[in-house]
Image (cartoon, rainbow over all chains, first blue to last red; front, side):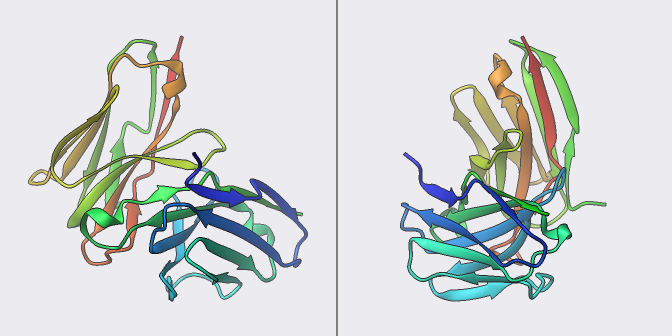
Length: 115
Length: 110
């Protein structure tokens, strides 16, 4: 029973061509996160939504945007992908932000290749 | 120095061995996560704990808040346990932010 679903699992795009990655969840969690993980590195938080409230990390490039049209779905838009944006993109959810509600559940990730 | 340090970075063992992976942190935390990532795969949350000990199947996680140290143990290890195990601390200052360790690459040989 998949709980956090990411599509596609593998995405190839061209340098500068906009790309959208998708995440959906069946957990009805309030919080959805997007992480970027480059090879052999720890995941890096890009931003998160608490319900409709968007929270951007200070060092997330403007090239990365996100949309959350409803509770279940969250999208990561990369407006002009560069070669340095090739990475695994991980979506995660949690019920809340504090205490026991903040356990994060991760999706399988989308591996982005930029040609 | 990383705020979350794991040891060892790489661990190779034979099937059936008892495995211990250690995590030390320097930040004040509200919770600590143990995560598992298979090669090229997504991340699975194994445990979230803020005190004491948790057990799930062959996996056991402990945390000592005073010593700022946590351990992940695997009993009767199996080749399918081969993965990267990541310790991540939830910083009390930024409730939504996980501070990740560098990961421990575990290989269990049959």
